[in-house]
Length: 183
Image (cartoon, rainbow, N blue to C red):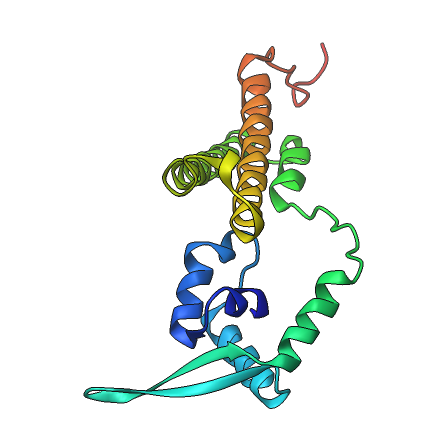
């Protein structure tokens, strides 16, 4: 959240919308989590709050990173990050498909494939719209573009792998029926 607020101060609702539109693709947070963390960051003096008057509505709280928050963020950015283990429920289902209803498991894989194809199309649209000349990007704009490229590559991986799995099962010979008794 400090990264997002460093990009641009925001209200809690604006921050939640940012998570829904972009940051949430790689770091998920519910609206309730965002508001809880904002309250904690105010208590820890990592962010400052400006009350902005609104006509016919309560004042809007706009959060901005404080000098203390800037130091915390700089320390966090410089700290080593451990490799994140892959935890994939779909991968476990794919591995275990032989122990249940394979057709149902393949339907689950197809649904995941469709979701990853949709996300990939969305990322590619963002790339084309927001970054038509990536070779000219520098600094923060280059960082945003490269994170988007990472998202595209992750989705390309999922689309490729799930397609390979489905294709292999659709073209594989029918396994023998082990439930029939031997003559």
